[in-house]
Image 1 (cartoon, rainbow, N blue to C red):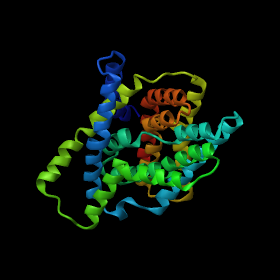
Image 2 (cartoon, rainbow, N blue to C red):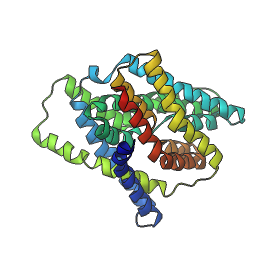
Image 3 (spheres, one colour):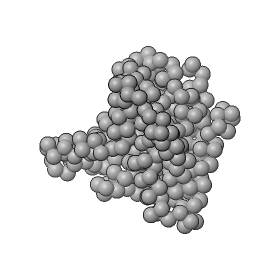
Amino acid sequence: MLAIFLQTLPFFAIIGLGYVAGRTGFFSEDATAYLTKFVFYFALSALLFRFSANLTLSEVFDWSFVLAYLCGTGAIYIVATVVAMIRKLSIAEAAVEAQVATIGNVGFLGIPMLTLLLGPEAIGPNMMVLSVDLIVFGSLIVILITGSRDGRVHIGVLKTVALGLLKNPMIVSIVLGLTVSALALPIPKPLNEFVTLLGGAATPGALFAIGASLASKSAERMSIAVWLSTCKLALHPASVAFFALMVFDVDPYAAGVMIAAASLPVAGNVYMLAQHYRVAPQRVSAAILVSTAFSILTVSAVIAMVAHLY
C-alpha cells in the first residue's frame, strides 16, 4: 500500500497546493471559478475526446459492467435516502444526501489519476462510470428535487434534464470521440496535436481547481459530513465490488477500475447542484471537504486492494 500511496501523493499534493493558494487569497474565488470553467469546457473535454476517439463503443460499453455499477451505486443511494428519511428530511434534502453518498469526482480526479495509476486500459471503464453518473444519477437528482417542489414530474423537468445532458461538455466530447472512432474518420495531425496539448492541461488544472475550491468550503455539521463521507469512501466501493465480483461477474480489471472510481471523494458538481437549488449546500460543502481529506488514505488502500484482482 505504501507504494500506491506514494504514487497517489503527487496528485493530492497538487490539490493541497490549490487549497493553500485559495486559503491564502493568492487564488481568489473568481480565479478558481474561471480555472474550473477552463478545465471543464476545454482541457478535460479535449482529453475525453482524444481518449474516446481511440476507442470503440464495444470497448467502452458492457452491460454487465453497467448493471453492476448501477446496482452497487443504487444500493448505497437507497441506504442514504432511507437514513435521511428516518431523520425526517425533505425529499429534496434526501436526494442531495444520496447524491453526496454516491457520486465521486471521476471527471476531475478519477480519469487523470486512475489512467496513470492503473494504465491506459482504465480509460474505457472510467468513462462508463462517468457517463452513468451524469446521465442516470445526474438526471435523478434534478427530477427528485423539482418533482418534490412541484408535486409532480412534468414535461418541463424532463426537457431541462435533456438539455442539461446535451450541454454537458463531458458527455458531448465522449459522444463526438466515439463517433469519430466508429466512422473511422482520420484526425488531422494539427488537430491531434491541438487536443493533446490542450488535454495535457486537464490533470494539473483539475487537481489545482479541486484544491482551490475546497478553500471556500466549510466543515459545519461534522457528524453528517462523516456519515456521508463514510458512505462515499467505504460503503460505495464495497457495494460496487459485491455486485461487480459476486453478482455480475465483471471482467476483473474493469471491476477493479470501477471499484477504484467508486472510492473517490464527493464530486464538486454535487455542491453546484445543491447551491443552484438551494438545498443543503453547507452540508454538501462539509462532505466534500471531509471526504477529500480522508481520501488521501482510503483511495490508496482501495487501489492497492484492486491491484490484486488482475
